[in-house]
Amino acid sequence: MSGVYLKRFLIVLYAAGLVGMNMPATQKLFISLVPLTLWFTGFICLFYFPKPSMSAYLTLGGIVVAAWFLEVVGVRTGKIFGVYHYGETLGFKVMDVPITIGINWLILLLGSSAVVEEWNVGGKIGRAALGAGLMTALDLLIEPVAIHFDFWQWSGGQVPIQNFGAWWLVSFFFHWVFQSGEFTSKSSLFRWVLLLQFMFFLGHWIFLQA
Image (cartoon, rainbow, N blue to C red):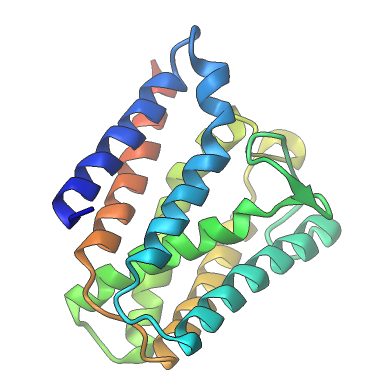
């Protein structure tokens, strides 16, 4: 599938999810499709990865596993992001954490990395800091939507400030690892994926205000 058609398909996919999840008649169906959408997006990112190699895929796989394991520690201890637990929306869980969450971290990492590569500002540390900032900004939009659709729930119903600080630090570390491997590139597809993520959660946030 060409890049143009793939981008159009992703627009339709995310737009359908946005509308379907907010219509009572279709809400249950489209919520059940959230894990599949994440897996499909992750597959697209890996299939169209600009610099494929065994080293690159081992690094990406390591990031997925590390992100999932960090969430396990976070859920078990409440010492990283705050006290929270995962609901049923994100699908199959191992040790109380959906396996899709590692894929989600990877999708956001690749998208935000492609954006900062396009900006070409600063060295490795600077790009890692900017990429982490983008991911944390997106989390500000994700949180109310995630709570509403039972992706996860926070103790007391409030998102702690600690969560956003931890998001930035963890995102910075993953960006630094990714930058260190010299796998980054200016991928318009990955930038498009990140834009769709922003628009998807912004759209949900607008629906929630209605």
